[in-house]
Image: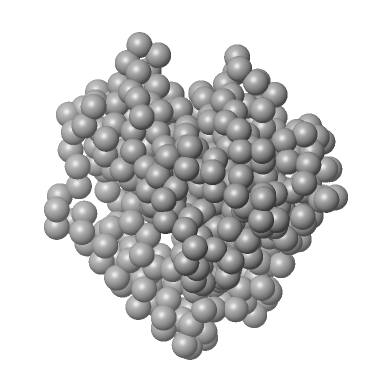
Length: 436
């Protein structure tokens, strides 16, 4: 286990930095427990980081920073129970590759797979789905190192009150050391990507949602144009995108050219509306069939800052129309598309979809572009609809607000009082969102 040395830690977007007293890279749950015990003895706070894909200070600490690099790998694949148990620092892309080799798959996933499994689930990372929920909702078991250095395992049957909260635990209840996910035999998805007008996609949203297992769309601000994506299970055969056409869409258009467009927009904001009109028409319709992770996820090389709110599903169209009106009447110049996804209600205490069918509106700004005015104005719209911000994305909400929009907020904070009374795992972010 490496220890003592410390350096400045930065998140992926570059908007969060931390200078811990020391860092540790434990290679096992036992070593992780020892790091936690030693931090407590030295009177230091302790936080685990993933790959830094959160835009908040959720993982920042001036105490002991636990890096996940060595806590990786597959512990067990149980084909009878149809589960896989992985070390907490395992990147999703590695998990997906191993499962594919074994002819298995997660049921649903987000749109990138760079994050660690613990980082992704602890902040509530999700994709889009009519019936299948977030990555955390696919957890069947969890191993947690608690504040006294002991190992606590939980599931629906074992410590169920911890399981109800710890699947999306924000790092507040302990350090996750391993996760067990439900898996299923690998299947094929057919993706149908198609441009559609803003008016058509919003007026037909309920039908598009109801008719597809996984529906999402992107609206290009300053235009009336959207790009829709429908993913549905397929009997096959597999028909992945051609190597050249796939590269043009996923790398050249969505990353290379988009990077140039964003850089130009940052340098000369007045050009953004005209560029948006051209670029929103550049994406063409396409259909392809492949294994799940190759359809759900895509490379995201253009760096940005993001805010996302979860709304009651029935409120999303009205809220999105309000966002469009805001952009149209303001002097804001927004080069990044606005993303809309859905999730069914789940039973996790601090899940953004806890207890209600949900739709998400995500807004982004290119890294280095001032985002506060845009995000603040959008946040005002979202909170008027009882929105719940993504725990790992920019927002200004506090514990008082969360107590109103999460019926089980008190259940979570009471469990935190029990498991971490001295706030060993605390930091400024958790003080704001959970209270003291």
